[in-house]
Length: 64
Image (cartoon, rainbow, N blue to C red; front, side):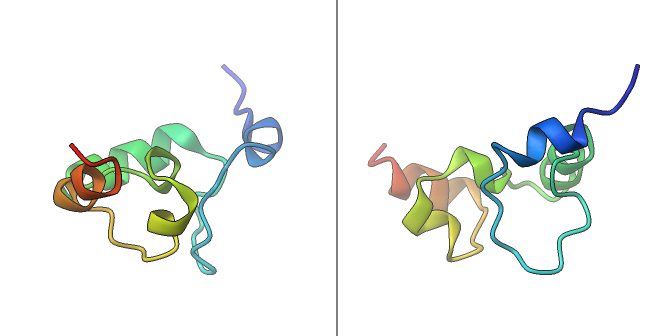
């Protein structure tokens, strides 16, 4: 299966400057879940920019 990185970059909302997983969704998801986090694309824009990818930050951002 070919990586769709270039296509995914059109939708990737990660604003972390040094991220080497931008557009590589499978690697991004694996990385964040391994660290008990969610990727930036799961957050609204203002919350994504804080770089707090914790489950608690996710719940707070979406008022859950």
